[in-house]
Image (cartoon, rainbow, N blue to C red; front, top):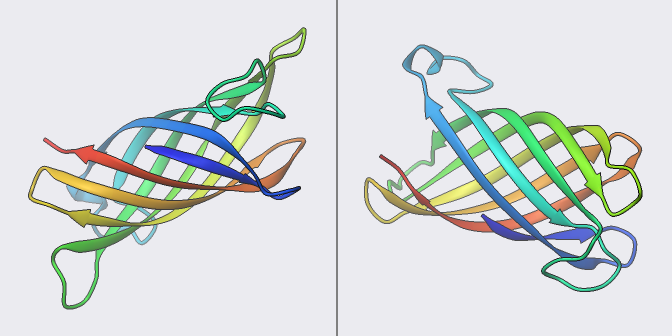
Length: 144
């Protein structure tokens, strides 16, 4: 997914790129929290200037639990919630600083067919020692 961080102080926009893998498990279908286990990698530009890349950034690896659900009266659009936890490594200083990451997302999926869709997502991010911030993203998904 490609998106932009909206940083609360000054509402500066920064690049945010995410790639992930997930698998839906039948035995989790009745679980109210999630039915899909995910792994994702995210790069975020944390610099004070530029959009695509600066020396200051974060690299996050996270495991997650996603819950997919249908919306009434439509088969073309569905929704999801996604809880993630992992490690963020912040670069740009003399030391790489690793911190615990918590991400909580809600989103909508526009299905083109059984294999292709567009995802629209809003994520509330929390990294230990960093104030919370939101990320708005849109991405294309290919399912097998």
